[in-house]
Each structure stands twice: as structure tokens, then as C-alpha cells.
Length: 487
Image 1: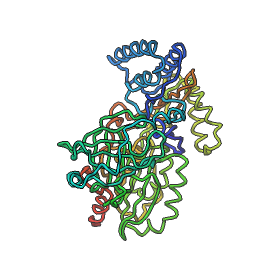
Image 2: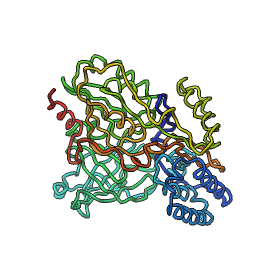
Image 3: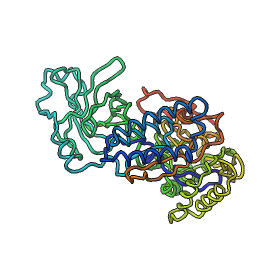
Image 4: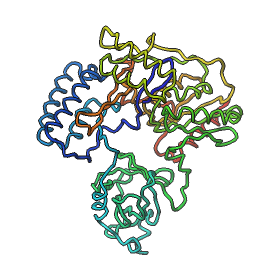
């Protein structure tokens, strides 16, 4: 979560950048001595500075954790080049996506020579010879064209000559030198519950995949891997933004009665973008009774980014539980270093300075983020429109979780879809480079004062109205529900 400027709490870091616990494919020529120094550094920070350590190692869990540490220390002594994965395994034990260990290099970075080597790998298939007329009818997907949502690959689904019931996703074009036209990117086999098969990663390693076709076969989702492909040909039967959440912010009309606002994240530098969207579309909002907010897979960021939106959906005081910070010298030093960031607003600087002062003056292990254990947000009036707000928040995490906690207190709001991501109990992320300079450690420095009675992490906030995966178009589902309501 990113730095925010509100009276209730502030948060550091971004879920999108910290949800990766490790990059196991990255291997460095790390000496045993350097790898062990990194290992001990991580343990020191986790034990002293991580806000979740005491809670997650309570009782018998402490013995379990120390046994894991001994095992992983021995493992890193034997195979120091696997440092990232080994330390990632230790941090994964905490089951906290705000605490992670990753390569200091860019994700997916590889040398040109390695790319050339990967590109030379097969199998290569003669695309124009794979679908004989006599077998094409047996595989209804054969001949459909697809594109990966990251924009890197395009592929065509073809029948497997050895088994026409099985589908092969064959690359037709690639922006990655690791893949070339004619190579099989995925294999799909019909199963009792849809499709199962194999998905080939960037390095051509094979992963078992569970695949689903959504939106009348408009989207192919490898659900177990968070990978989506969209159908290019024939034209999708359902608008793709309605199935695969868009990476773009937008606010537009769906009908004379309903508008839609897409919020892919709440990053601090996007707060102004959200405010501008609302200001530029004020007339639309003032004259439209229903608003769909698409916050699916919102990757969090800054609570302050959605404060302007709350004015439109507000109906009564909004209560928010505060957080408390782990009071350590390292946490204080790193927060203090942030005061030099020129991008922070005066309000944010003031909040950080207050936290630093409280940590420096702490008499115990924890300091509160605010002056009270909770805060109350109010606005001067209730906006006549929108009258009804439907929020689809499936998979929204970090500040996305908090947005749902805040918004659902409005009498206008109904939540839809599936549970949020549940990444909020431990937050306010700091980071430090390992002694070897090859890895970055990130850890949560605060915990919610809802704990231990009301945990949300790894559970999420449940929707008022669930939407089944069998629903082809969740946006239209919510729009129709809102438009059926009467005042």
C-alpha cells in the first residue's frame, strides 16, 4: 500500500509491487557466506521489525517457525544460489502478502544470450497443416485466434493431430525472444469440470493448468496461474472489459440509468486521476441514478486516492479502525528517510513525521497511528445521485479491501462478486536491500486494531450478492440488478 494522506491511517508500498514473495527462476552466483548474511539479515528484520511476527509465532507456532529456520539455514548453506527461493519459503510461512523477498533486478529480466537460447527451443509445429478438414469439427475451438492480456503473445487454437479432442495453443507472433511462431504455449484437454492441461512459462517450463472459458468463450483463463487470454477472432460475444478487468481508469455511461467507474488501483499518484474523472463527469454523475464501481483485482495503494469518491456514495458517518506501528529504530529510520521524498504532500509528510516521533519516543513495542483507536469520516451532504451503487470488488486487496470496508457502510452501496483479496491486517510496508545488494526485503510495519477478533487477511470481505463464475457478463449482471430496484 502507498503513502496516503488521511486522518485515519496511512500506508506505504503498493500491493502490485509486493505481492510476489520470490522470483524462483532467478539464480545468482552467490557465495555461501553472502547468502547466509542475507538470511540472517532477513531473520533479524522479521523478528524485530515485522508487525506480524509476535501474532503469527504465538504459542506452539514459535517452535514450528524455529524448526523451519533451522531447516532452511542448512539448505542455504548447501545451495546458496537458491537463496531467493529459500528465504521466500521462510517468509511464505507467515502467509502475509505484504511481506516478501524478491530480486533487486527487474522481474523477468534475462540476458540476451539466455533469450536466444530459449527461442531456439521447440517444439515447432507447421501451423497451416495442423487442422485437417475431417478433424476440425471435432474440436470446436480450432481456428479461434487469441491474445495474451499482457500484449506479448498471439496464438491460434488448433486440434492436436494425435487427439482431435485436445486443443493446442500455438504461438503465431511473440514480442518475447523466448518464444517463436509455431511453438506450443498451452495444451488443453477436456475434463469433467471443464479443461485441464499444461501451460508453458516464459522459460518453457511446464505448469499444470486449470483452464476455464468465460463470457461465451470470449476469455480463456488459467485460473490457477492468474493468466488470461482474450479471443481476437471471432469477435468476442461479450465486451472484454466486462470479463477481464481493464487496466485503465474510466467513467462512462452504460445506459440512461447507469454509469460505470473502473478503478484498477489506488496508487498515490493516481489519486488526482480519480478526482479528475469524477470532476470531469460531474454532470453525468448528478443525473444518473445508478453507478457500477468495477474494483475487481484492485491492487491497492493509497486510501486517500478514493476520498473524493466517498463524497458521491456517502450517506452516514464512516467508522474506521486505526492501526498500531511496530516501534523499532529501523522502522523509524526508514520512515524518516521518506520525509525527503518531494512527491509527498504536506499532509503526508506531517503524518510520517508524527509516526517517526511516536516511534522514537515509544516506551513499549507499539505506538498508535492516530490519537484514538478509531476515526469517523463525515461529509457535509448526501448527494442525490447516484442513488444506488454496486461495487464489484472480487480480488481487491490492501487499500482495495479498505475501500470496501468504508464504502459498504453507505446505505447506497451493495457489494457483488467474490471476496476481496484479504491483504490488510498487516500493512504500511517498508523495504530494505539485503547485505549482498541482490535482493529486496519488504515487511509490514503496522497491524490493524481489529485484531485478533476481526481478521480479514487471506479471508477477504464477502459480497452482499455473490456472482457465480457461470455468469458470462458480471458488469451487465450488476447493471441489471441496480436498474430493477425501485425507490
